[in-house]
Length: 62
Image (cartoon, rainbow, N blue to C red; front, side):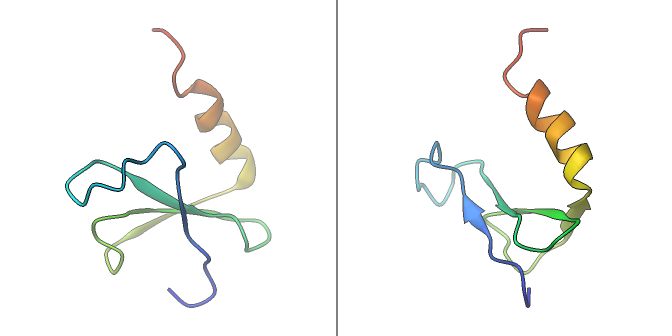
């Protein structure tokens, strides 16, 4: 994807079969997420506010 600088989580095992996403935050007004196993596949583009809301809920007990 031109312009997006994707980064993998530091929690990623580096295993090619593992479940991991990559996130790009280098474009103003957007946070872009993709499947690390399918870098040419679809992307999910979110507002920074929506991403912050999602990230704030990850790992919380249900």
